[in-house]
Length: 426
Image (cartoon, rainbow, N blue to C red):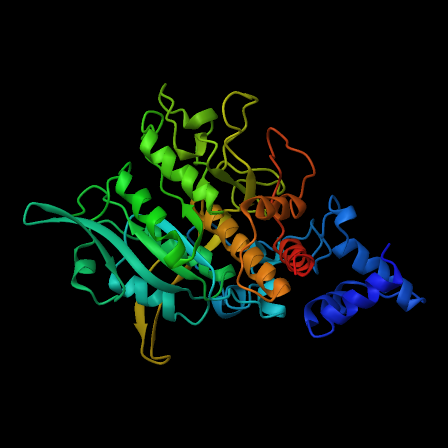
């Protein structure tokens, strides 16, 4: 319980911050003794002594589910389901309360690096302009050979001619759209991978990717890396890349990757085990959870086939750290110019897989950093350790489970905790 002095101090801090009092008004019925009840609420939300309690006071009960269509079906009424975050994929974690109800957008001191297959100029424009959810793509990093010299190019203009030669694209477009729905206005730097017939882009295991990110981390204010693309690359012997990963961790960059969409440990397929980046301890790996009844997966709160980590092996890295909605999450599938709205936009459909759970968690981390900045009233970032502590605090499980891991991260809980940690750090 908070003492009177602590209460008065916190009341002063939060009087100008409507979020906690709106939370109190919306999600709790004050008892007869209003002062006592408010103290209880604040102590639950704010007290570091009670950090093992989970903030799951959301407007939707955990057992509430709204069927939202089959995979690849159009998202009905995207202005509401995506724009206002009323789809079950968002209400499940309370992202709708933080982002829509309280209007929390990502501040200008947070940047997410997305590593994926490519972007066309119209996809870039749609990600920045579509009315439902958008991001700010501040840079596109690609690699190409010119006159026998291997060059790295940082593009800031979506009309750049290099974007006309993107043979493989679409996956990165969908990944960023999943990020955009929760992390409104977040700054994004896109790292272009060379896939199949691409003329431009980095090879999957190219050291230059990590050299560029590490060298530009401070100047570009890079906080989060979201990597949903996995290939059969073994990083075990490439010590130079591991050194860059270690350097980024030291700079408090959190690195998130997709767990993969198959059924066995270490992404074993056809008798082979491939040590994707999720195998390595530098990476926090994200699986999918069924946030509602959909398709052939009848039981929500269980991982879907798109998480696929059912085995009991405890060897190596735990592979999956957290889960987020991924079995039916709105993503952009097309780009076109809307003559009525006078902007580029896309068609929202339901996508599946850990590829989209990963940017979802990246978006929650962006909210955490933004909340910490707001509480601190400064752009100083929380440490990586602090971010992990907040993620664990807002996880649906207190302990690690071989099948469910730490469960899913609740956006509502995470933002409130981050704000309070920022206040404490003043």
